[in-house]
Length: 467
Image 1 (spheres, one colour):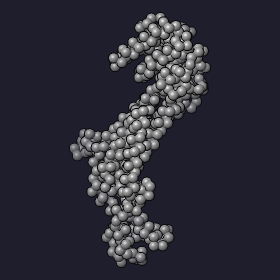
Image 2: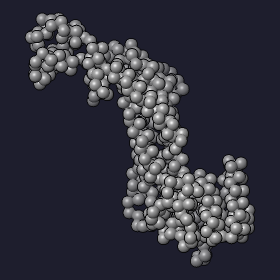
Image 3: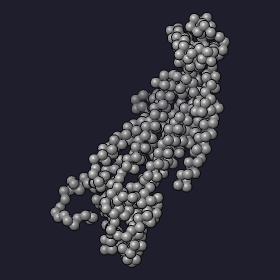
Image 4: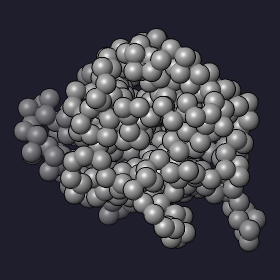
């Protein structure tokens, strides 16, 4: 069965048939397709385009097809059609007979697939929001549990200043919070109905598109029929947000890969998310994290592919757009699985605070604090910075830490070196306490951020439940 075969004759090349089919992929849209068709038939009936009898017959048939599909998860096995829309019409004809030919009155596969895709996208974005909330909850739970753990903060992967591990986790909380808001924004932009746009010029029947949009659960009807049938920027946006989320997950994965290596030993990834080596019995590989890192690259490629797909298309619909669903389905599925996997991994992560604490003795993490103390004594920061840098150089040359310096050695470089400066140089906790600004790593600041994060999560959970 073809929905477009009237003007054609002869046999089509089987290679082209195989090359052009999309049923193997877009069968995933079956329930959305049936839902849109049911709403559209109701609207045709309200507009008196269909007789009440025909509308009832079509609705009865569509409901029966939906029931069969729902009851039989393997409904598509052994089936073949050009696409899911063709399959629905063929199946409907078997159910209700020739009246099925009236289903397509005033509509096209163009506005139908656009509506199906938007409905799928709205649900997929909600699922991604839920998965993001799961990760945010895990980050918050682990941050609360590890509030006393102190670790080196890094820039350029070199020891920089001491931070709380909770503060580190809250950095990722902020990243994924922004991803959550991007998902919300994308869902709002996708929340408009293309139905009634026809192939490109709009339906020629008195359809109330706003009423039809409400029937389908959309916030509004799309305002331009050309745009409604050919716009895929919301699909691209969802793929991009998925890729960006994976980039953030990849950064977190990279950190945990480093921090879980024996050289660091800050954290231990649970056995449930690790694998071993087929040759080396001692190995514990953080494969879950490495796979997340690898899949980020795949999704970045899908963003580039979708941009290339859209960049040269003339208005309105072009068959190129069939390719959007492969990228969309894979991107949202991958992002959802990766978010949930990371949420479970974070929740089961075991910390080694002693190893973290020992690492803070390396790299002169309090050097900035010594310079700040000199500034409080009236020394210009540039001069204080130079003096402390020379002191670090002196210590490194002799394999000393600040705590191992004696006063006479230190006074060769910093003449005002005294007990207070020694205390500042030795005190990791003092370094933390100094940073009580909003967003700082001081314990009091971090506790405030933990409380704020908990309130934010509670509010977002309520909003998503009622959205």
